Amino acid sequence: MKNQIPNLITLGNLFCGCIGIVFAFQSHLEYCAAMIGLAAVFDFFDGASARLLKVSSEMGKELDSLSDVVSFGVLPAMILYKMFQLAIAEQDLFPQETAYFVFIIACASSYRLAKFNLDDRQTTSFIGLPTPANAILIGSFPLILNADIGNINQILLSPYFLISITIMLSFLLICELPLFSLKFNNFKWNDNKVRYLFVLISVGMFGGLKYVADQYLAVPLIILLYVLMSLINNFTKNEV
Image (tube, rainbow, N blue to C red; front, top):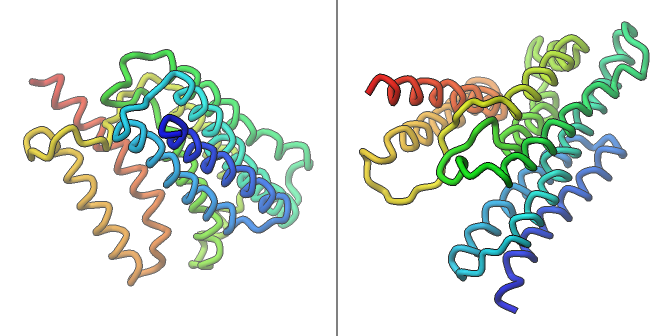
């Protein structure tokens, strides 16, 4: 039974993804965002529990990726699809079939997860944007829309923005860009400077924007910060 605990947690991730897709069909996109967040919690604890119980297995690794395809691949693509439908309805610039374009996100996520399973370079860091980070970014869009801040809704519901963000995120998912991991092997400052700085700045951004505009605006900025800090970290390592 102990061996199955991480797998049951992983299936919790998959279950959240399935429920999120149902919410997407019902156009409850803010609930989709909540399901992505909950799936990310399950995704964190399945690996942590496997390491704690010392029951890591190849089956668990494959099950984790299969679950991630749904929760962090198909579900965020469904959010973009519903947003694209809203954008087309409001602006009437593109045929309805154009919305299918955003499912490239699901394809890129699947490719990234398959690559991750075979890539032994990604034991302590990532190559390309992790699918949970990508999904959390997309999941923040409905929450930002609900906040109704200035002209941001017009940007988010622009077909041009949705096409551009789909292309950009799909590229980041599959590109050969090294990104640091948030996994701490120890808590020494010298070994984890970039991680500590990222967490501190992210918390400050999230808390600060809560009082200025809306805290969910911090999510896209935090993902951008993550990519930029990884680039700087890679550059400084090469310099040394």
